[in-house]
Image 1: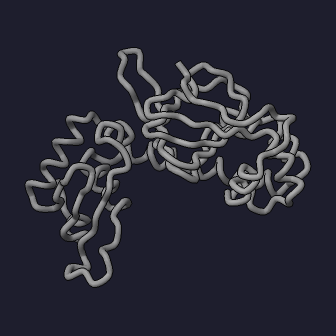
Image 2: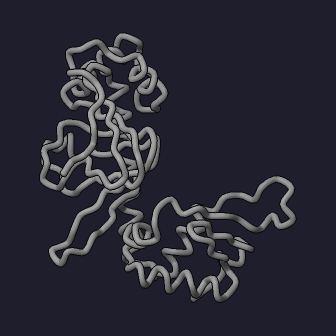
Amino acid sequence: MNNSTCLLPPENGTPDPRIIAQLRETGLFAELEAPDLERLARGVREVEAGRGDILFHKGDPCRGFHLLLAGQVKLAFNSTQGNEKVVELIHPGQTFGEAVMFMEKPYPLFAQALARSRLLHISKLVLFQEMDQDPLLCRKMIGSLSRRLHHRVVDVEAYSLQSGWERIVGFLLRGAEAPEAGSDCPRQAVVRLPSSKGNIASRLNLTQEHFSRILHDLAGRGLVLVDGRTIHIPDVEQLRQASP
């Protein structure tokens, strides 16, 4: 059941100034003029979702796309065997659903809030009207879709050519944060897992057991220290050069 809550009045109502401000802060719409933002805002809904709420199911019609303001959302589908495959983890500032919107097909997967979340839903009818008048907005939408496609190609390459070890080490290195100023060990780093280990394992096309086994192996070799969702890397270069 979709438990998300729509907070704004119908599209023909007066646009909410908060929505206009939020659109202006989004890279996709930052260069629109004030009248354009006001027209666009009439087709925008602010949505609140609690943890576990479904934003849309596989097969639901797509009437626009979402922009995540706060929280976290996963895009996933279930196999015929009942196993869940996480396709993407959405973080604040990211959008999702654009490709399906342009294809005018139903959603091929479902979206679920992993934490209490706030989102904007942008109506495709209003967006298409703005795109008809603004070539720059069209280019930005194409750029956004192109980046998503590039990420999918990188994913397929990793699944096809990299071992589970390489995928996990690569994930940790990409997420590594620089040490705080004044640290005694400038080669160390910290990774804070953005979601549960099960979701991340699925995102990397691994079982949770395989993910945990490799993480345990890394910890046993002193390459990482695991503290819940916080992963400490004592030496980034040592981890980068390590092999299974």
